[in-house]
Every structure is written in C-alpha cells, then in structure tokens.
Length: 130
Image 1: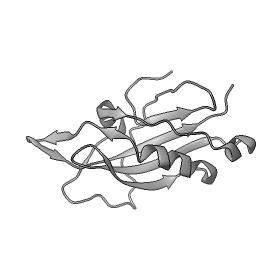
Image 2: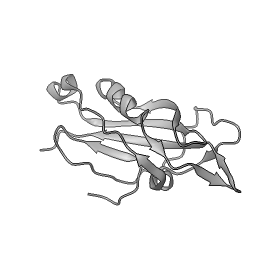
Image 3: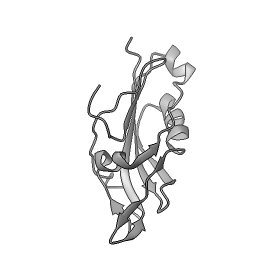
C-alpha cells in the first residue's frame, strides 16, 4: 500500500483499503465558497476521522468496471461534508462513491483561531485486482 493519510480510497470487492496521495487542486470550473480554505487532499486527509467504505456496486463488478471517482468536496466548519461535486468517474461507480463520501467526517480545520470551511479533492478508486 502507498503512503497513509490521503483522500484516496481504493475499493476492491473483498480487498483491503489502500491509501495513495492525490494532491490535485480543485477543478477550475467548480466554485469555492467565500472564506473557504483550499487544502491539498493529502493534507486534509490527515484530518479524516471517519471514512465510510463504499460498497462495490454488483452491476459494476459484473461489467468488470474499474476506475477512479473524483470529487470536489466542501467540508464544513464542524468537519461534516457539506457539498460534494462530481469531477469525473465511471457512471456505474459514481453513486456508491458519493453515498459513502457524503458520510465522511473530518477534524475541523482551524485558521487564525477560528474554524473554516475546507475545499479539497477526494478520489475513490475501485479495483477488481485479485
């Protein structure tokens, strides 16, 4: 497995969780809320408290669909997922990834003594590798 502490999750039907670094900036066509901090995903991942593991969709398994689903995420001042925008990903995998990531919680980001919203990217990788 790769370095720990990244906002990337690799999902296998009955496999172990693997983390790898993905530090892409937010997609240029998606808005960043005023006053939000834009944080690289590998930095924000160190604040991840609860990562709900997506369920590999049965139809995607049957179709041998693999790939990465990428989101721009807005994490609220309390650490809860406030907004999740799809950037890219195979259609058969998007909903499972979104359902799980919406439940992720983070330790609140504090700048200058006050909690702030955070905008980051999250990748969820689905792999059928045996």
